[in-house]
Image (cartoon, rainbow, N blue to C red; front, side, top):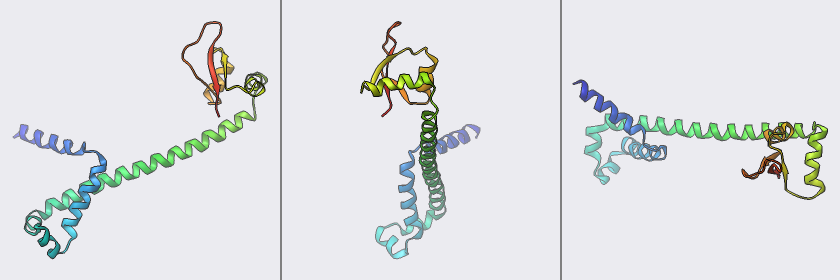
Amino acid sequence: MKGRLFMDISKVFGIIKIPAKYYFGISFITGIMLFSPNNILNKLGLQVFVKDNRTWIGVIFLITLGFWVTDFLIHIYKKVNKSINIKRNTKIRKERLHNLTQKEKSILSVYIDNNIRSQKLDSFDGTVRELENYKIIYRASNVGTVFGGFSYNIQP
């Protein structure tokens, strides 16, 4: 008995692993079965099946609808959160650009004065790391030299 219960629970958790995009379809189909008039169910040949299994169809409908709605809400939350983070980070970067040190200005002026997008900088320099952490510049290559440094590009 104990082994059988474990197998049944594992099957339930196996169903949960179904990709969320299928939950909407399952909810839609079971919803049609539950809420369609008898004449439509009769034309589809489902009236007897639905009558005999209405409870289970309802359970499947509620579970899959719950999973689908939860997945949809998580998706919306991630989109909104990403948008908020982008706006926040952009604001922080703009404020940081208005408060640059003289050394940071000299590094960035090379890009502007020479009309270039890339220059070699020392990745161990704290000023370079600060500009990189604020995503004002980024390391364009993982290949560099001890004396020449790494190529850094300015963000567009």
